[in-house]
Length: 342
Image (cartoon, rainbow, N blue to C red):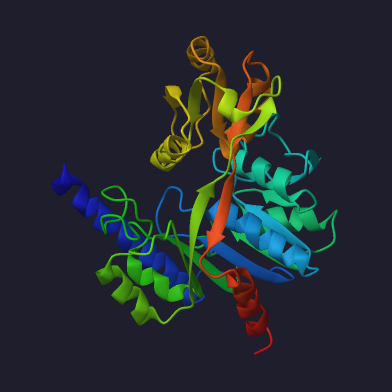
């Protein structure tokens, strides 16, 4: 299998590298939006924690008096390539042009947590932003969620997240590995954030390579908070005798470890693929022999109406960021603010 996939991985890496070169040489055109554009992305598929970092960055900008907006692709949102939508808190002031339903779990979660920050969803993010500007004033900052490879939109700062435990996975691009681009692509970045950064991570060889890039580097850990109840009769988590865990995220092992640490008794674990819709009939069957359901915030906001149909209490596990340096977000904002005045 490796011999079959290796040429495809090389081809993927080659195409990715030449695509970047075509943008850098001006053969492919980049579009510019009014205001500051900041990309938060990575070089691998799957979760490195982009969504919580986007939320934290928007909150820090708001605290400084800025008016950010988030531009997101809306993976598996149900939107056609030429469609877009806008969420603000629990409202949708700009619905899709054609789609009757919107399935945007991360975007909905961001809208709920950021309240007055517009979340603009669309594969063609430049056109989605232009549509937004027909009805709303331009934000001071556009936060491009999962944007490192979205080169069509010019940006003022590229923030790249790396999973400190395995920053480059196996070192191979898709389909053999999980990389979208080879590690040398990090030369385009302006800031690195190492997520899940235990003191002994990343490994020494990787740390040496990252040091050669000479980029500002910040470290953070994800901390799971105490389960928070959203549906059902109020009951403290420690009073729940047994749980059914339902997850559709890239790395469920982190949540399983956290729940074990918190001493929660898991009777069942239902797992779906990242961004996949849940089989609620199956979940109802599992809940028949447990007392409550617990899920991630992203999974809950994919289908809050379906969770409301369950007869059992529903809890979410909030995700909090613990920065190695409390000043990290301010330092990052100062970096792209200063770059505009050079």
